[in-house]
Length: 248
Image: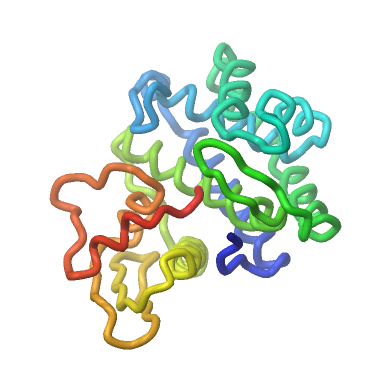
């Protein structure tokens, strides 16, 4: 499954912008925020950031990437949870200011190496094990999923710390549109989807499909498998289509 992945140049711009927004968020977190729980149990804010830093440092260094993937390899597939676990394990005791500095320092190399892998080996199939159980092209991971992961965890951090995420149509709206295209390809049914907020828009496929209205961020949270908050439930006859998962 590959979805509507952004073109390589656009993918790099989106990745760089998202890394920058995540860096700005964690750099301004007060000390007391780092121990707050998140919706990504059992991670608190510090451990969630450790995961994102670990993934970004892996993207910035082929040697670090290889070390992490060795932990996740199961036969011919790579499982997500063991890779995330080693990212957190090796950074869980790093002080928050150091985590933030390490993240900022890894951004340029992460963007560069992701683009390089996408160009040189983008068509290579990648078997992803539990909990995803799919085969992707490497460019899908490099150009789309890694950026979505940082984006969604930025939302997770904002929710955990009581902040509003910085959202814009040109950046977040493009990420959301890519998620919608991926979601539509996966369920293959006609629909009319109205997403509200700065990252939202009107999306449709086919004729005679059910209608669905919700917030753009809540849509992404729902298809990522997160629990939709009370009062943010989608409206319309197409709500059942939100059971179609999309990788983040």
